[in-house]
Length: 144
Image (cartoon, rainbow, N blue to C red; front, side, top):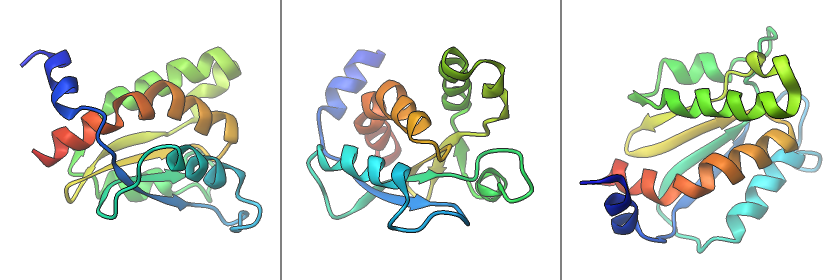
């Protein structure tokens, strides 16, 4: 089936998402990136069954950044294209520092898992250019 047929079959269906902030410096009150993700998701029709998990934070290379390391061993299938495209788009914003990002995506137990850096600009970039345009399609593919 061609790509566009798959997107048409996936339709504009709603995808219930969980948001997890991975940080030792953020709380519910000061988590700008988590709030941004929740705000963006609120614009979509919500569902009660979780088909996607969006993690923000902990994707860098400092000793405390362990999100990627934790996910790498758990993901059943990886989506290397997400990481590649995110760093390419990020390069346009932050230059060579984009190589420090270990943003990743894949599947785990029937859900789409996306991990993005904790900066609001990185969250907005990942959402607008990669996650939102393909979220329904990804969830449909994983669930079929």
